Picture 1 (cartoon, protein in one colour):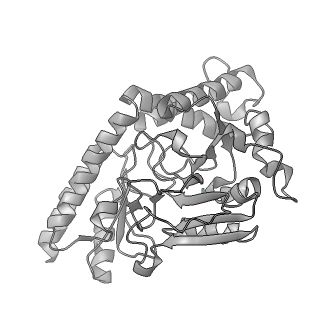
Picture 2 (cartoon, rainbow, N blue to C red; picture 1 turned 90 degrees about the horizontal axis):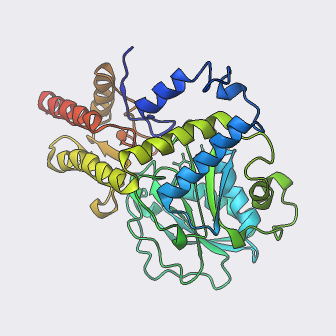
Picture 3 (cartoon, rainbow, N blue to C red; picture 1 turned 30 degrees about the vertical axis):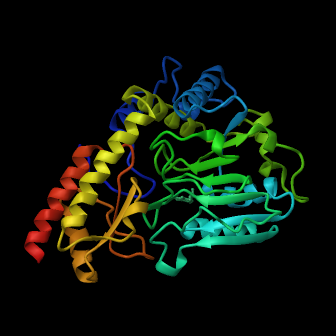
Amino acid sequence: MSRVYNFSAGPAVLPQEVLKEAAAEMLDYRGTGMSVMEMSHRSRDFEEILTTAEQDLRDLLNIPEDYKVLFLQGGAHLQFSMIPMNLMKNRVADYIVTGQWAKRAYTEAAIFGKAVKIASSEDKTFSYIPDCSDLPVSPEADYVYICENNTIYGTKFKELPDTKGKLLVSDVSSCFLSEPVDVTKYGLLYGGVQKNIGPAGMVIVIIREDLITEDVLPGTPTYMKYKIHADAGSLYNTPNSYCIYMCGKVFQWLKSMGGLSVMKQRNEEKAAILYNYLDESRLFKGTVHKEDRSLMNVPFVTGDKETDAKFVKEATAEGLVNLKGHRSVGGMRASIYNAMPKAGVEALVAFMKKFEEENL
Ligand SMILES: *Cc1c(COP(=O)(O)O)cnc(C)c1O
């Protein structure tokens, strides 16, 4: 067996310890004689998996009692419509457009009401986070929406916007559990788990209880009401049970590592190794404003398409894989999520140095 260093933006690297445990339990989960994949989602064993996963997530993020945790399907994309359907009571919502995912959410919201783009960084290929200290928040807005870490462009909100008293809704897909957050600052935060937590196929929604009501937009399908899922404890229909099990293992791994403040420190150390090198390199350059740099997704370019392609190809041969950048930015992108060990980032930088010497 040989494992590569996988810099994919998602689905992405998982902790090796977690994969090993899952492998050991694949044929016989703790004496049940079956895999978790084969288990009824109404069984006692699965119920324990689900409640433990939720409790561990609550512990990690310090989620207050008056917030519900929902394990849903449909990925982050389904939230682009579930959010307006459930929260856009006045049919007005403000969007801060800092990348492709925020733009998709904004476009989707416009199906249901007046989506107002109150700030954007599209003028410079989303390479920065706009100033959000004094936004033209709409008086009627039901919420202000952000994408907190922009997976494709490599920017992150270091400070939450001043929403002037409006609810904050945040897509945290690619920075979920990368550092501690104050859940009380949000009305709703959510993320697809395939970036920084588990396998693809699930989204976790953390929502303040009073926002879960029957008062949704007319025509909202039953399945798209938060209330249905909250009342059923994420078991309204068959959930992605194996994904819940895997995420639960990752939560336990995070706890064993020391929790989110330790993860933040590790993530800062890892990102610094790469950013410090990018700042001194004569061949490679980071593509975003320094003060807005993401700890999770690091895009960089050489400025020459052929050199970029050569780099990606040679890195792959060295076991440093999935470094090709998103088509809208070009160049390279290294996603260095929680499960990427420091040794992986060190190996990448060592290879970049060698490549720089050979190609300048
Ligand atoms: C990947 C990603 C999405 C889309 O996720 P799906 O699960 O494929 O719908 C949305 N937002 C962010 C920030 C992402 O990184």
